[in-house]
Amino acid sequence: MARWRQAGYFEREIGYYKRLAEDLAHVEFATYDCDLVDSSEVEPIRVTAQGRFPSHRIYGLIAPLLRWRTFRNADVVKSNQFAGSWTGVITKWLHRKKFIARCGYVWSLNVERSSSSRSRKTMTKLVEKVVLRQSDVIVVPDRLALNYLAVTHGISEDKFVVIPNFVDTAQFVSAPSDERKNSKFLFVGRLSREKRPELAVEAMKITPDATLDLIGDGPLKKKFEESTSNLANVEIVGRLEHAELSKRTRFARGLVITSEYEGSPKVVIEAMASGLPIIAVKAPGLDYIVKDRENGLLVDPNPESIAEAIKLLMNDQNLWSRLSTRCRELAEEKYSRDGVAKKEIELINSLFGDSH
Image (cartoon, rainbow, N blue to C red; front, side, top):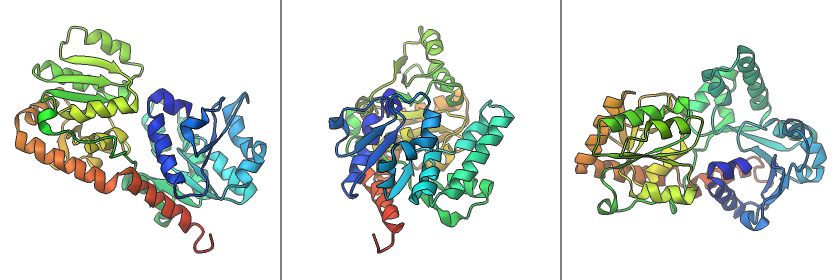
């Protein structure tokens, strides 16, 4: 939860679980946070924190014993992401509870794409395999994750359920085109090597009539603050709270996403809810959620192609309007918070059949 707050999406995640709590008897977080949050921020959700235990890794292994009553009284244990999911496995073994393993992203694939050592990559796959095989249900955000995990670990597709990432379509809304800034484009994401923000910045150098807000934090932030100091059409905004981000997306012209790879990026879903066409480079994961000329433009991963797409969205109002309308429609049809929460509630109830 502390990481949610640091990343600026505490309200988004808490809001989703509050929605679940409307239809479930009780929702409780078992978190690695050292301190309890203000209960008024999360009601009716209860929070069991790690406290001052010295190691979160060891705590995750013995939490089902230390917090015996909390875990014993649960009907279902769900991992919010793969990190820490071993707590769910141990709870299943110790307390005979149903365990839902949620993979918001594919852990082993991310590690495989990184510069991690071979031993870490091997260990990651092994742990992932054990956890997923021990779970009762595996929740993934899209078919790409399902296919990869099923093949990699030899798990039947019947054990998987696709529940996409969500967006609050009441918070992220589309402003009329005449209220938008025709030249304003956004990059939203971690300023790091794999996100390749330099492609968007370089594209700005050849589209002086457009402006770009770089929204996010990361190890390359200082570098871009220095390299863009003489670029009048690029602003380094930094991290934004979720409510402020929704205001930016509402009045922009398009979102530029340049990652080497993605899972099911929430920033794209939120942009779509805001009626914001997506300029995405052709990369694994992005070409799954962004369909060329339907909800955005798919381009080659170079500044020139990105610049051409920016100019097209600025100058072709008919194209922009069609893409914008379809973006909002897709967000409401597939990714609304209420719709996604309903799918999860149905999944939880299905674990108990008619007896619960």
